[in-house]
Image 1 (cartoon, rainbow, N blue to C red):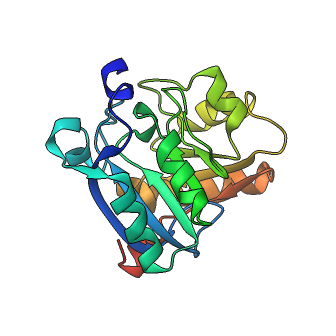
Image 2: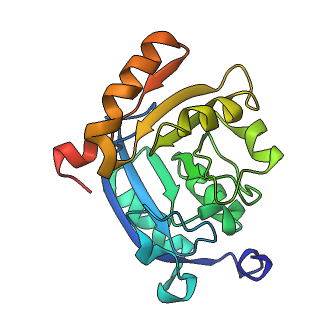
Amino acid sequence: MAKVKDRKTNSLPVMEHFYTIQGEGIHSGSAAYFIRLGGCDVGCHWCDVKESWDVNAHPLIELKKLVGEVKKAGASIAVITGGEPAMHNLKTLTALLKKNSISTHIETSGSSAIIGDFDWVCLSPKKRKAPLSSSFKLADELKVIIYNKDDFDWAEKNAALVSKKCQLLLQPEWSKAEKMTPLIVEYVKKHPRWQVSLQTHKYMNVP
């Protein structure tokens, strides 16, 4: 992981980047430019972008060129995701985005130190590699993926570690959505500090 962090920060391995609608979490429904970085050291078995895991499988793109694409699209929000984006030093990328008046968001498991200047941190903790304590402190949004019934306990354990201002969301894993969504609905009704998050981009058929 250290070698990835030490890469020259004038470029990053990018699996894909595109302008779309944010489909998940608090900002669901908002236009956003997604930057999906290559590399992941968590490896969830239900991950729907396993092709992002190998950091060396994706081309290095110059950050100025990448930010130029975000600006050209007219986006006001850039979401940095992965893979596991916190494996990379994102200080230069976020500085360039902010210089161009683009709000910076990250979606991360928090298993690596988050390096960069972010306006919104979506922390999505994974059991295979739990978040660092520093990640909990930075979280604006805690989004827990519910794959089975045990994940509700996992959600509460993580919720106890974030600040009071942090928004709490439960989201069904896509392949289990039909089974788990009704359970999440009932859970939120009994525990209203939580909200339901759905992968609405999949229903809308947008990337």
